[in-house]
Amino acid sequence: MSQSTDEITRTVREGKDFERNLEALSGQAWCVGDGVSTDLIAPGRYFDLRSNLDTLAEHTLEDATLETTDARFMEVMTPGDFVVGGRNFGQGSSREHAPAIMERVGVSAVIAESTARIFYRNAVNVGLPIITCDTSQIEEGNELHVDLLDGVLVNRTTGDELVIDPLPSVMMQILRDSGLKAHVQTHGALELD
Amino acid sequence: MGQTMTEQLVSEHADGDVSSGETTTVDVDKALLQDGTGPLTVRQLRELDLERCAIPEGTVVFLDHQAPPMNEAMANEHALLRDFATTVDCQLSEIGDGVCHQIMTYDYTAPGDILVGADSHTVTGGALGALATGMGSTDVGIALALGETWLRVPDADYFRVTGEFSEGVYAKDLILRIIGDRGADGETYRAMEFGGPIVEGMRIDERMTIANMVVEAGAKCGIFPSDERTREFLEKRGRGGDWRPLAPDEGADYDNRFEYDVSNLEPQVAYPHQVDNVVPVSDDRVRGVEIHQAFLGSCTNARYEDLCIAADLIEANGYDLHPRVRLIVNPVSREVYQEAMYDGLIDVFNKAGAAINTAGCGICYGGHQGSLADGENAIGANNRNFKGRFGNPDANVYLGSPATVAASAITGEITDPREVISA
Image (cartoon, rainbow over all chains, first blue to last red):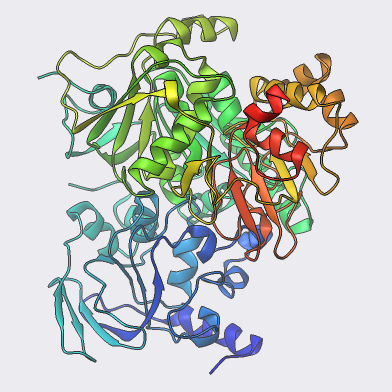
């Protein structure tokens, strides 16, 4: 079922209030396939909306193709849901707006086979958990549960349990502080071992 | 054991020698922001009460992606960036001056530098023997404010290039071929280092074209040696004092070594919607594809030498472009625009009916100056063909060299430039 523009605006508002519990992330999977570029997540034609992340967020993943529906991601997602990709998620431009708007609309985490370098770092910096593991068995609509600290992903629909590649300790420290800005606010400098 | 160029550069900026795989904090020499990513940097630094710059001589704010701005929202972003540059006393590059990577490489980056930029094509700086890499707005903000950042020393692969380019085949065709072979994620988290006889003979503009696109294979950076070519280039730019040599140590520990003989290389084209969809121009997937728009612009291939190649082909064909094709030209910088004017290249494009835009990024990222209509095909000399680039997710973008772009604009379909040269 698709949401209207007003409902999308409401989703963004709810997403902003969404709080991630890194030990217990739960939601539905939306599958977007291999090679999702930052252009598909935050299209260049909305360049001038970058000054207002709430407005840009209404277009999150607008050009990505979902596995089971022609609807746009923002028409169907609920804060707490997961975005599940294949290989090389987040390839392309360095725009931090791409993970930032996913974080803003309340995506619990991005789960992908592999991720592009800049995107990975940006996601952690904006406080969006990013998980790499075998995503081939996850289908759209599956209910997922993740404990990031224990490194376990449970697919509650299929009963599968997946081991998650651990985040580098530097990145886990940043994520625990809810992103790089918050990290620097807390410590006054880069405090990374 | 010897060090790769990457390990040498990171070690020089860290506390002592480091090897690939280690995570370390490094001093940063140069930083760049642009008008798409910079405003977020400024807002983050203001919220952190950290609006300052540790490296003001080497930090440049570029107004190039939306130049001139399309509306009041972008005009306000530009105002924010001008205000930031004044406040922290760093360098500002105004609308019309040109694309960040061109100006950064020509006027600021020096061999041996660590450069971080809030733009993925910051890797272009590797052409001069710098470790140049793209990061997000917050990372670059903190790097320029504190003068340091953290990074993981990447594993390095070595690309040795031999042979001789045949007529109509260029550095762009080589890097497209490499990306096609390695894949869009084949070099993720890695450094690509280049060497061999062909590289030794390459001009800096050609090295920039190659370094610019290493990110399309996922690489963190692409590094060329700093050699006599680099010295000559810097001397010509009035920056002879910035030169220093850089080369891999004897016995440097590369993960993989690849050998490319360019003698039999054909012009290459990337077809939609992935940069690693690379085939020779003779392949049925690209040859003869009807073209509506041709784009000669971007940090990849809109330098003086690139414009010359395209203008020569257009002039030799009587300034006659296919009536269906709109040719859009964005010289990469004001300086290049000026040279192109003096030498009659702009005349050629104008006579041929091209739309000549302000020096800047143009339509490459899809925000302004030439969006495609539904179902249209374009060929560009730029670096990305993802869905939605050129402003429309229902259109198709192909990538090739400036020669292939010009040849295709002349015939109206994707064409081997060698057919137009010999026509």
